[in-house]
Length: 131
Image 1 (spheres, rainbow, N blue to C red):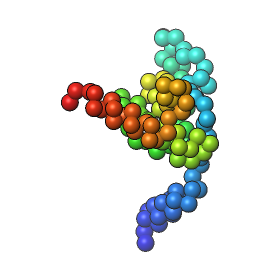
Image 2 (cartoon, helix red, strand yellow):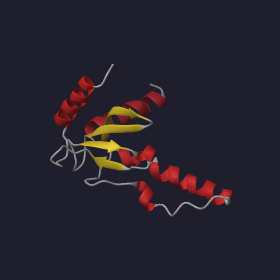
Image 3 (tube, helix red, strand yellow):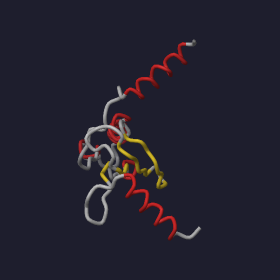
Protein backbone atom coordinates (compact mmCIF):
# COMPACT_ATOMS: atom_id res chain seq x y z
CA UNK A 1 0.00 0.00 0.00
CA UNK A 2 1.39 3.42 -0.91
CA UNK A 3 2.26 5.94 1.79
CA UNK A 4 -0.47 8.33 0.56
CA UNK A 5 -3.13 5.63 0.63
CA UNK A 6 -1.97 4.42 4.06
CA UNK A 7 -2.29 7.97 5.40
CA UNK A 8 -5.78 8.31 3.92
CA UNK A 9 -6.89 5.00 5.48
CA UNK A 10 -5.50 5.98 8.89
CA UNK A 11 -7.28 9.35 8.69
CA UNK A 12 -10.55 7.69 7.68
CA UNK A 13 -10.35 5.19 10.55
CA UNK A 14 -9.43 7.98 12.97
CA UNK A 15 -12.44 10.02 11.85
CA UNK A 16 -14.79 7.05 12.20
CA UNK A 17 -13.53 6.32 15.71
CA UNK A 18 -14.06 9.94 16.70
CA UNK A 19 -10.41 10.82 17.25
CA UNK A 20 -10.96 14.21 15.62
CA UNK A 21 -11.35 17.24 17.85
CA UNK A 22 -14.92 18.09 18.78
CA UNK A 23 -16.73 21.31 17.87
CA UNK A 24 -16.09 23.24 21.09
CA UNK A 25 -18.63 26.06 20.81
CA UNK A 26 -21.99 26.47 22.53
CA UNK A 27 -22.37 30.22 21.85
CA UNK A 28 -21.84 32.44 18.83
CA UNK A 29 -18.19 33.09 18.05
CA UNK A 30 -16.48 35.47 15.67
CA UNK A 31 -12.71 35.06 15.16
CA UNK A 32 -12.58 38.68 13.94
CA UNK A 33 -13.14 39.79 17.53
CA UNK A 34 -9.60 38.65 18.40
CA UNK A 35 -7.96 40.78 15.71
CA UNK A 36 -6.64 44.28 16.28
CA UNK A 37 -8.32 47.14 14.47
CA UNK A 38 -7.62 47.21 10.75
CA UNK A 39 -4.93 49.77 9.85
CA UNK A 40 -5.92 52.80 7.84
CA UNK A 41 -5.33 53.02 4.14
CA UNK A 42 -1.91 54.19 3.08
CA UNK A 43 0.26 51.82 5.11
CA UNK A 44 0.31 49.01 2.59
CA UNK A 45 2.70 46.80 4.55
CA UNK A 46 0.63 47.03 7.74
CA UNK A 47 -2.54 46.37 5.80
CA UNK A 48 -1.04 43.31 4.08
CA UNK A 49 0.11 41.99 7.46
CA UNK A 50 -3.38 42.57 8.93
CA UNK A 51 -5.01 40.65 6.05
CA UNK A 52 -2.58 37.75 6.58
CA UNK A 53 -3.52 37.62 10.27
CA UNK A 54 -7.19 37.94 9.29
CA UNK A 55 -7.06 34.99 6.91
CA UNK A 56 -5.15 32.81 9.40
CA UNK A 57 -7.65 33.55 12.18
CA UNK A 58 -10.89 33.53 10.22
CA UNK A 59 -10.21 30.55 7.96
CA UNK A 60 -8.49 28.33 10.52
CA UNK A 61 -9.81 24.81 9.72
CA UNK A 62 -9.84 23.97 13.45
CA UNK A 63 -12.82 26.32 13.85
CA UNK A 64 -15.03 23.90 11.95
CA UNK A 65 -13.88 20.57 13.42
CA UNK A 66 -16.98 18.60 14.30
CA UNK A 67 -19.19 20.57 11.91
CA UNK A 68 -20.71 18.77 8.91
CA UNK A 69 -21.69 21.29 6.23
CA UNK A 70 -25.06 20.52 4.68
CA UNK A 71 -26.08 23.71 2.90
CA UNK A 72 -24.30 26.40 0.91
CA UNK A 73 -26.09 29.76 0.91
CA UNK A 74 -23.81 31.29 -1.72
CA UNK A 75 -20.76 33.55 -1.30
CA UNK A 76 -19.13 30.96 1.02
CA UNK A 77 -21.92 31.27 3.62
CA UNK A 78 -22.81 27.81 4.89
CA UNK A 79 -24.96 25.93 7.39
CA UNK A 80 -23.90 22.74 9.08
CA UNK A 81 -24.79 20.12 11.64
CA UNK A 82 -22.63 19.83 14.75
CA UNK A 83 -21.71 16.14 14.97
CA UNK A 84 -19.33 16.22 17.95
CA UNK A 85 -19.02 18.33 21.06
CA UNK A 86 -21.42 20.00 23.48
CA UNK A 87 -23.66 21.43 20.71
CA UNK A 88 -24.02 18.06 19.00
CA UNK A 89 -27.26 17.80 17.02
CA UNK A 90 -27.61 21.57 16.55
CA UNK A 91 -27.49 23.41 13.24
CA UNK A 92 -24.99 26.27 13.01
CA UNK A 93 -24.35 29.01 10.47
CA UNK A 94 -20.84 29.72 9.24
CA UNK A 95 -20.83 33.32 8.04
CA UNK A 96 -17.09 33.90 8.45
CA UNK A 97 -16.75 34.86 4.78
CA UNK A 98 -19.11 37.78 5.45
CA UNK A 99 -17.60 38.74 8.82
CA UNK A 100 -20.45 37.18 10.79
CA UNK A 101 -18.60 34.34 12.51
CA UNK A 102 -20.19 31.08 13.59
CA UNK A 103 -23.49 30.94 15.45
CA UNK A 104 -26.29 28.52 16.28
CA UNK A 105 -29.39 28.67 14.12
CA UNK A 106 -32.56 29.20 16.12
CA UNK A 107 -36.27 28.77 15.60
CA UNK A 108 -39.01 31.33 16.15
CA UNK A 109 -38.93 30.60 19.88
CA UNK A 110 -35.17 31.28 20.10
CA UNK A 111 -34.30 27.64 20.80
CA UNK A 112 -31.45 26.08 18.81
CA UNK A 113 -32.56 24.23 15.68
CA UNK A 114 -31.89 20.53 15.41
CA UNK A 115 -31.53 18.85 12.04
CA UNK A 116 -35.20 17.87 11.58
CA UNK A 117 -36.53 21.37 12.39
CA UNK A 118 -33.88 22.95 10.16
CA UNK A 119 -34.68 20.58 7.29
CA UNK A 120 -38.43 21.23 7.55
CA UNK A 121 -37.78 24.98 7.51
CA UNK A 122 -35.49 24.56 4.51
CA UNK A 123 -38.15 22.54 2.66
CA UNK A 124 -40.84 25.15 3.44
CA UNK A 125 -38.63 27.91 2.08
CA UNK A 126 -37.75 25.87 -1.00
CA UNK A 127 -41.44 25.29 -1.74
CA UNK A 128 -42.18 29.01 -1.46
CA UNK A 129 -39.31 30.25 -3.63
CA UNK A 130 -39.85 30.56 -7.38
CA UNK A 131 -37.98 28.04 -9.53
